[in-house]
Amino acid sequence: MLPNDLVVKEMCLKSVSLEKRSANFTASTATMDADGDIMEQSWDLARFKKNPVILFAHDNRSLPIGKAPNTEVRDGQLETEIQFASAAACPMAEHVWQSIQEETLRAVSVGFRPKTIRKERHDDKDVFVLADNELYEISVVPIPSNPDAVARMKAALSPPKVEQEQSAIGGEEKNMEIEEKCASLEKTVGALNERCKALETELSDARAKNLAHELASVEKDIDALIGVKIASTEKAGLLKLAVLNRSLFDEQIKAIGDRPNMTILGKAMPSDPTPHSLPSAGADDGRGFEKLIG
Image 1: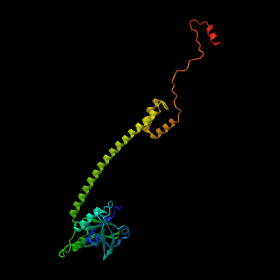
Image 2 (image 1 turned 45 degrees about the horizontal axis):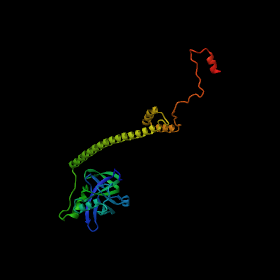
Image 3 (image 1 turned 90 degrees about the vertical axis):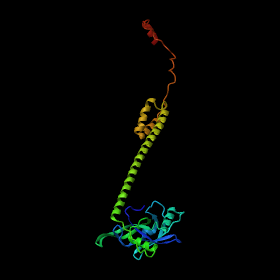
């Protein structure tokens, strides 16, 4: 996954090769962009060249739409040639490729981390200069922010009379864009909160059902012990223990299993084989008792 703190800048299309299924882009120049930044063309490409895949709109969770092994700094600007994946390998790549041919998509965006940032004065304005830039990824995107890139794209694709086109985002439009993004994020957060509540309810219901199922199983096991290892009066206490402390309940059941089986008396005690009768109280003169004991 790409870091969340990457700087993102957009540049645009130079030319298209139908035969090679590729497009050349100026990925970055030193022109001041719409954010008021200047990117020095001092690029560290080692990381990118180890895996030069191309994404669409910085979506690193989807399949790459192509590759760009031929990415270099030439004549003071970052140039890249994107070779698009086949429709069979990635349907989105085919959509992007067709859109580039029809000129509805014509920009790329570089995701990078500047190792050096300094503040300079240009045309009576304070600007940030981004230098020693480590390239992480390149994406095809709908909207560029570097005006020089659009001018180059127009020169390559439009009739000779069209020399340049400036792409600048005014302060009012930028504020509106920020407000729209904030509203969209608030809506997303609200939906996520509702989803969390629903999931908590589902989890609570699932836990209750699971507990009921476990207690039914426990009660069945206890019933099997009644009359064999335990008395019926012990059932209520064991059920309560199972709810309060399942570990202690399991230990208790194990101890009960070690008890000897209970003996149930099935008949009355046998009669005395040598029965004797005491004389009645009214007829006793003492001699009957003496005879009985001796």
